[in-house]
Amino acid sequence: MLEIQNIVKRYGTFTALDGVSLQAQGGEVFGLLGPNGAGKTTLLRILATLLSPTSGTASVAGLDVTRDSEAVRRIIGVVNGGMGLPTRLTGREILRSFADLYDMPRARTEARIAELDEQLELGRTLDVRAGEYSTGMRQKVVIARAVIHEPKVLILDEAASGLDIFARRTLLDFVAATRQPGRLTLYSTHVMSEAEEVCDRVAILHEGRVLHVGAVPALLTQTGERNLERAFFHLVRQPAARAEVHHAV
Image (tube, rainbow, N blue to C red; front, side):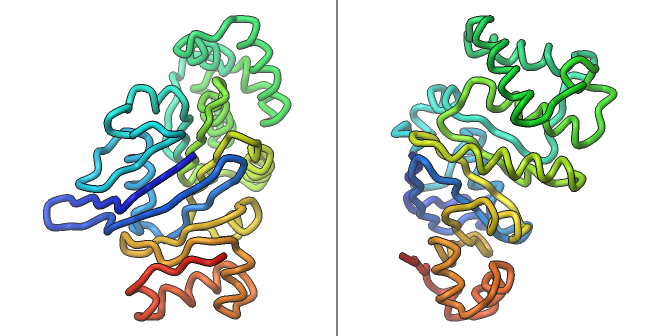
């Protein structure tokens, strides 16, 4: 579902991504972890066809993100922490208009809205104008909008940012439920406890490079640490670890 080969992204003399290579399969939630500035958002923007790499290749569900960008956009859903909504529309109107972009039949759209209402606990957000939303209400509708067309690949970039404890729990439960055959969820965060809960495998990025790819239990065993946050610091604080990529079974 995802194939990244030696992606480099430079902005002038600054290298945001330095030879990143990754693979992810359908049926998993794949975590992209690292501090702010690690290169996570840059990589996800390349996968979402919003940026072009300086060099290297990436494909989503067999489609090249550079050559087949329009086709890629039809099979992905994207959420980040800062997405806005048209303030004069209700949640239901927003979801219907987005479904129309994907030529979804109205009956399927209404059924899909009902499904997402149950999964994300949308409630009154569906019939209230977005200008009246709290942060949590807005983010729930942003997520529903991103998945209304049942994308093969869902990209969540710091999607829990700013959410209260109730909205965050709804989001994490929803992410866990996206684990389905033929679908991939990319979950980017700097909050390690979130990734430890919902991700099957993780890639740890630091200063634009991949330090580790593998399952969380393997990383804990490798580092001898008791949780993912401690294992992360164990990796990034070792100069030898930063010099090469570590792959766990």
